Length: 448
Image (cartoon, rainbow, N blue to C red; front, side):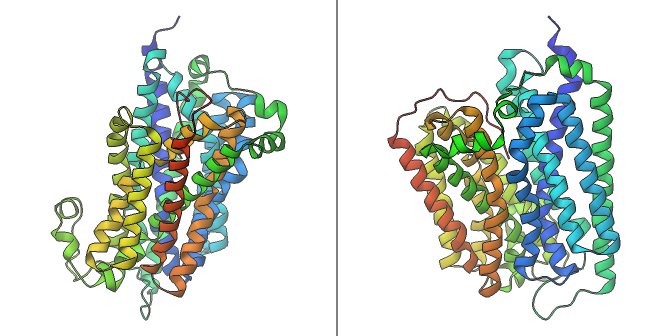
């Protein structure tokens, strides 16, 4: 038996993958704000960036599982990384020829690679070391994923949004547009380099990592994608869980991608420096000295929304050891719904702080919904898990609806959409509490 210490470098590389896809995913928030100004888009058109990215989860989840079952972890990771490099290169071309359609294509390819990466990397992180440390390793890796989602908006805001404004009556200068495009070009250039370095590492260490990799289930490859989907749709709880994942991811992504526009609105922080009186914001961010929160500052401050999810996972993990999971989910989803309704009904400066705090309540939703569904679904775990991962396409569709509402009313009014999502999720949690689990709880649950 090989020493777990041998797997240290491989585990570090896998953990870097978690950070990378968290960072890349959270770049969508400042990118949505940037493309709206660069290409003079409506809210709905700008939200197509999120649509192109998250629709890949629906298209690629089952095929990625089939790829893993056929080629195992390391080849799947290498294929995923190569696909991600291709997506980054498409983004470089799109920035240089100023083509928004190609931006959408690049985001789809990039997210397709990330989907395959997640399918392979989650079980691999758990397996690279002693069996008794598997839960710690996966949790530790996912913490780096959260760190990536926190840093992404800050870096993206500084690179994409210098001089970019989208308020009515304000025009983006050619110099600001060129600088934003150059920032997008630079960001995805460096990302492609980082991903290429990881690809080289996994190629050189493929034997070592392959020895530790767990055997993937060949259910998807053996039975086929459509057979697995058909099985999942025969289970009431698989369908309910899919709906819940759809609504949760949709609400979380919609709030994140609209947060910069929301905070920048004159009715929130656009005409006020009140945000910089708050200790956390004044400690993390520096004001540009111009009264009010600019779009660039608002996009950077969005990091607090994602950072709240990181903190909430730590708090939620401790609470889940003592509190019924369905009950805790009901409390968190109900709390998020109330906060959205506060933003919708009250608005003003305080609404900015409340909106950022919603991230804290998002924290436990994905893993708890996932586990509650697996425990109650009558379909196989492979079919149920694949269906739930496919339901992440909520991140593609709900932001479009939110963009449609904000475009016809306001960013404040648009919070009624995620409020409705969270209320339905609260009903799901209360319903799950009434139904006894029929399957053993899963040992590990992947993050999105």
